[in-house]
Image 1 (cartoon, rainbow, N blue to C red):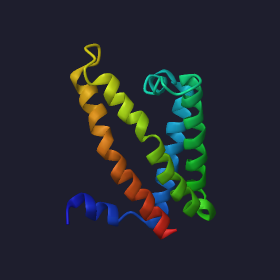
Image 2: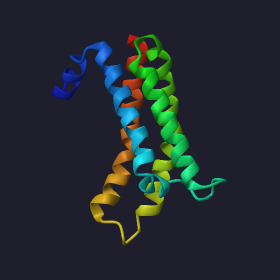
Image 3: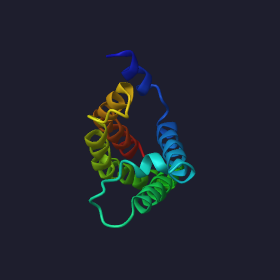
Image 4: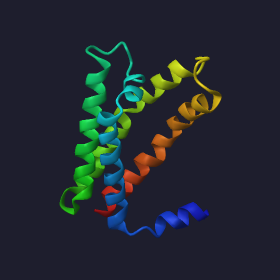
Length: 134
């Protein structure tokens, strides 16, 4: 067992969901406070404006985060988080598509965009743990 796995097992069950909820609320607020970076990864092929999707995903993140923060709704929040993490994955793929060969994006930015893709898996796994523990 790795050190990170041991550390994750030591997290109290209730705080895992609360921390995920706080993180999602914070990210959702960021969609409104600084929307341009989020706009830039919304696929242009989608109908409507990119800003609409930025705000809609911000509302979704705040809502899911709020469900996770409240112990009574944490289980539903965990399932909602899984759906959210799966739902935003196409935007992350689109970011890689747009940035991979873009000379205006630095190499670390392009590497970070690619690195985000597999990170969805542990996020989904953590949400599943919250669901099972709630």
